[in-house]
Image (tube, rainbow, N blue to C red; front, side, top):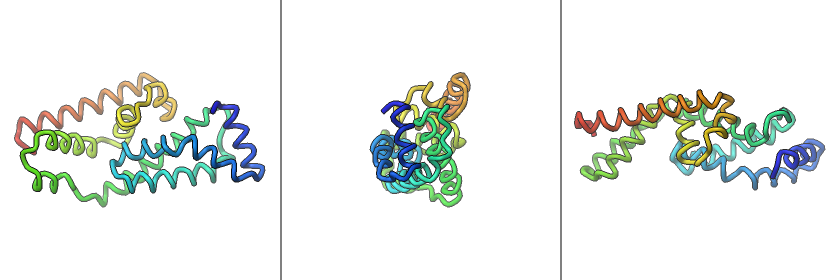
Length: 179
């Protein structure tokens, strides 16, 4: 769907045709889920966040500014919800990777995966979100910069900084034997 179609659908919904929201769900549900899944790597968490994002989108349709792309607006809401939930979960999170290490020691692929997951978990929310959008959802840098409302140069810089931190974590833990 193009921007004009979204504008028409939103107008219909605002004017009482609530069933038109199913078109928005069809257009965005999978992508929202993929972003959340990439961010949290937990199906249940991603499903909850997807539902929360769709509800928030529905409740705030009248706040969408038509000069901003509808997709960017949807992904901004998704991004903000991911960051908010991440902050909440980070306080409560049990380090499951330690359990993996104890159960399956010596598995090189798994060890690398665990190290990358740990590194991702230790990134600031914006870096984590950007890496998730780029590598788990195959979004283009220009799309990401629009969704996050930052310049393309800033997007590249944040991505580079996040990747550098992941590499540093993975390689430093290999060298020091911290697995």
